[in-house]
Length: 153
Image 1: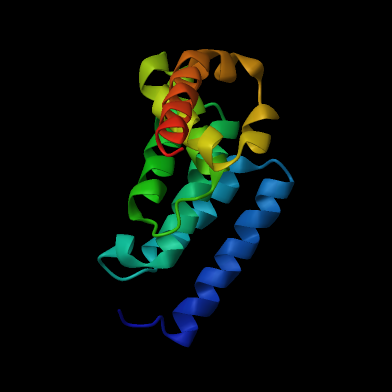
Image 2: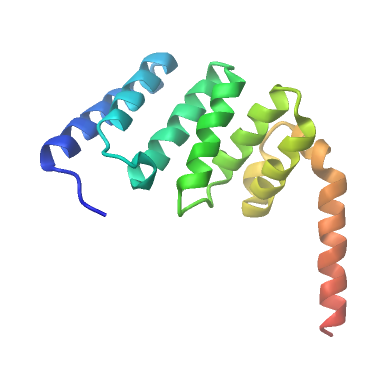
């Protein structure tokens, strides 16, 4: 993949910095607008750029704070689908939370389970209603793990 020109890289960096500042001030829509402008500077196909995944995850997190569940899930899912690094429990959890708040609890379970498997500590710091949703699934996963451990002995 080609590299960004210095000029485009500087513009994207400036927009990202401005987006971060807006987020710190809880100006989530302004932050989102900056991140979207940065995406528009990427050449096609935009999803092949590493920056696309980072930008879409931050847009998704902003929409989550704005309680725009549909757009939050859409952008977080873009991030998960296009990133080679999908080991961030925050992104998985947030995508699950967006689905959960769209009354898609069953669909949200896989995202919550993945977040839990990536970091039990992170997941356990979240609201217990999400853990309660996946308790039966976690019990089954643990039972399967125990079966596997018993067979190897």
